[in-house]
View 1: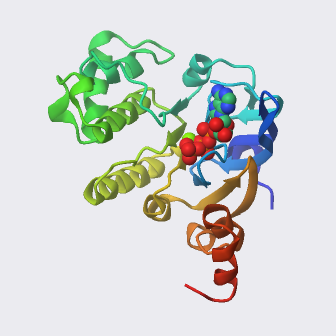
View 2 (view 1 turned 180 degrees about the vertical axis):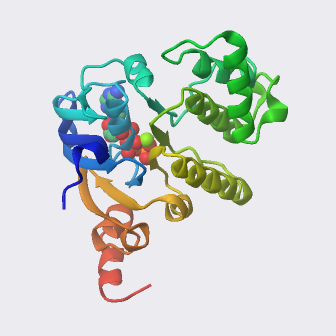
Length: 255
Ligand SMILES: Nc1ncnc2c1ncn2[C@@H]1O[C@H](COP(=O)(O)OP(=O)(O)OP(=O)(O)O)[C@@H](O)[C@H]1O
Ligand SMILES: [Mg+2]
């Protein structure tokens, strides 16, 4: 049964994207319900980041619609989407390297729609930094932090905007198993508080731990979708990642 309008957080209808004469997205459609955690997988170059860029307003689709919380947002710039409750992190963290971690997060808190008073924004920034376990790094210039911690600063900055929908583009790259476990537990807690999440990662352990459903993308097309445990065995997904030889092994029950 189709979800009612009130439950839909994000809907994509037939989104297409071209770079020059190359087709990058070939008509992507899907729905994301409020409170859902949706994963996106696909081999390098499948179009995952391009899709994130379109949803978050950093790039415009050549065709199709993006509907966020009931409003068509295709033409909205990123800052308008941010104020409407959409936050994201980037595959290569887009942080202010000379600023300390707390100042980076403060940007998110202060740029909220209502521009809270500075002390209030500072308090919120400190809280969001504590959520990602980096309270002791608040005064450290971000350029001095290792990449996984820079990713967490970016996550804290995104949370400080108080998003309704959060997009995470390979946030766990380079994480230790312990950091991954902490991240997974944190994301599930955020979902329990009402956040909707769309995340992409090559680390299937994270997706298996947190997602309700996963979409598999290849050459700009959704080739499969379902619960994470099913997708990892899906012949087309195996084929997209490893080639048809492994796919036929899987079909024959091979390991
Ligand atoms: N600005 C651009 N101009 C031209 N081609 C681009 C541009 N951005 C991305 N591409 C191409 O579009 C395709 C999809 O790229 P995209 O970054 O969305 O893939 P991805 O699934 O995120 O890959 P990865 O897993 O490596 O991050 C790639 O072939 C890439 O080279
Ligand atoms: Mg990418």
